[in-house]
Amino acid sequence: MERIVVIFVISAVILCVCIEPKDAVIFKLTNIECYSYNETWFVIHKCRLKALRRNVAAFYFNGTAIYPAYNLHLHVQLLKRASGYKPFLISTVIDMCRYFRNPYNAVSKTLMDLFLDFTNFNHTCPYVGDQIVDGFYLRPEMFKLPLPTGDYKLALGWYSNQKLQFDTNASFQFVENLIDQ
Image (cartoon, rainbow, N blue to C red; front, side, top):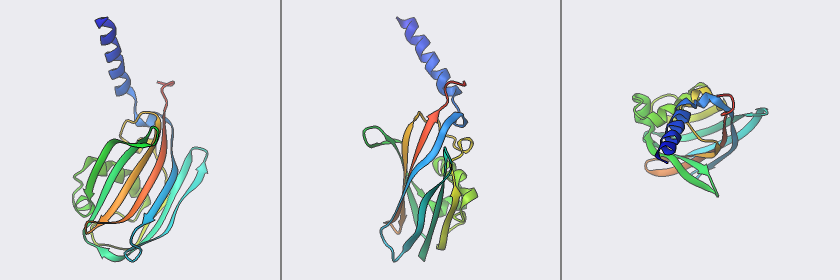
């Protein structure tokens, strides 16, 4: 009995180590929701997905920060769908002004590596004027977190001066390719 348990544990560890995020068969955005709670501070003009191919959807966002943001924090939560969305793996707050001066957080580094090619949101504070994400799509080779197959939601709460200003919730689907391993 002990031998079977040992073999099972070793097999599970090898399987987890061998799965790389680039081995995803499907890794695509499925839904985007954007809410501005204070339209005198931040106005959202466009927040939408556009299908490029069968398993590729691009995210387009255009918003305007009316007043400069000198103190911007981002609350990041990764939720997994299982009879509703449940907290999974990540829940952290990132000081965005500090991050762009010195990237200190592994979670924020992973997220920003995904977005930097598609946005003008890549400078230090203050943030004012148009904030644009143009044609962002998920690329498995850039996502460094191993995830099991499932539906996920990335909930981003944007805070300025400790007040929630707007939310961006992105749902995505990740399907592992275990057959070609």
